[in-house]
Length: 345
Image (cartoon, rainbow, N blue to C red; front, side, top):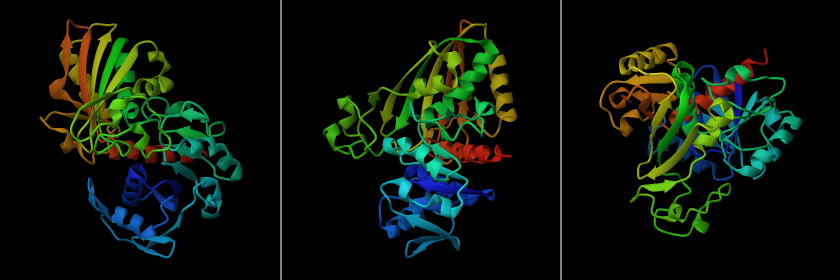
């Protein structure tokens, strides 16, 4: 049984809690959440506007969560170093806060006795290894890599498929447009970016201060950068732009790819369909005409929309994919934690 420590009980943290409670091979054994009101944490775990009611029982007794009769100690420390993770014998600590300072402290946690730390975004420094399942997990070294980035939701969805297509036909150039639901740092009404309540983010794009529920908001994205970090063979061939869209969940990526070798559309369809069978833990091949909300709660990294597959002049490929940017991504974070812990053997 994998014993997980969880720092941060926001959207990703709560998704991880729900996912691990559905699995028999891992459980969260200790949580640190800066909101000291444990009853609010109980409420947010029990009721979710996106994923509905928790399938089970969550309550509290003092500073202890009780989840399906299982006790989970709760802490409320600004500095994760002040949490006695080692007391709870955690195998892996997942930092789901998104706070830059916690990345900087991660190696100090290793020195304190936490075996491994997983960071749920893609920082440029202070990590030992960035991992995306389906791309580079075979390069992970348990003895060398202690602080691991699980990348970001967009890169987790697009990178495995890009690497597969590059290996099969070669990628000369690729441009990606991601359509991403609003996030908590955006505003409900127009306002200054100075009002954004996310301490780890700094932007100069004033449009991100606009009402997030009324407009498509174009913005820069780190999806390309995060992809190249784990798939350097795509460096110089890839760029991306993003739109924040006025929906609450499920992202899409529109990928336009120029290939080195000629591509036949039927061959492409057969290849992607077989890929979804061979790597069914990561891919799904969608043949129905569905919309974004139909993919709510889908645990796959990448849902290939077969209705939108197109090939132009044998070397220009259009691929549309869907992914639940919370549930799908969090499912991979849990898988990475399991893989990392298994490597110690």
